[in-house]
Length: 201
Image (tube, rainbow, N blue to C red; front, side):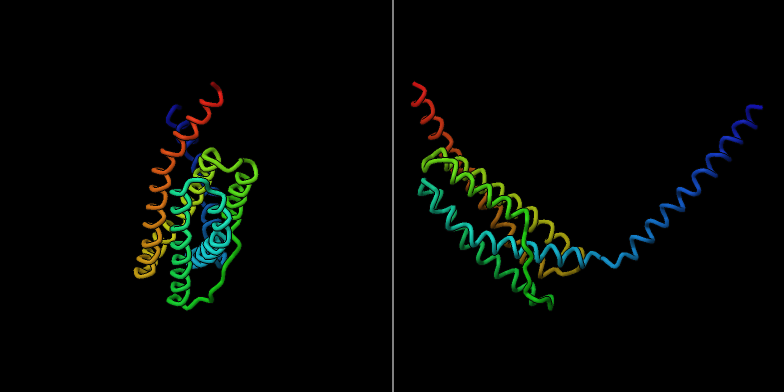
């Protein structure tokens, strides 16, 4: 009797699982017929990144002017020049791929820039504002690192190795800028802490 019961359970399981397997197969087939491909993902992300860099180029001068530390101003000014070169690299990639030079408004970058503008409004000029500005700037760097790293990987997978090399150049610049901001933050944060302690004395 136990063997019959076990057999019935297995039969029930197999019958119930068959429709699920078919359903998954239908979903997979439906997904493959959606008309979108990895190429579409790549092109949309490229347009988004181009838009992000153009938005940042427009926003950085205001952030630079708001910085109190000369070291921070210099770092942000250098990165503005790098960002301009990165935008040119993207334009070169558009040409290499035979794509129109088209940018898409990057909502993520828009939010990060607005956050930096809010810092400028909320804090008076000084080391405390610089402390907050560095946090905002590093959030921007981390977004760019993620974007360039992801597109670099996609380009490699798609066999576009020269394009991947150009993305990697920008990725290295972003990582270097992020490390520099971390170094500057160590000094700025200490000054901000000392200022707070003096106020509380």
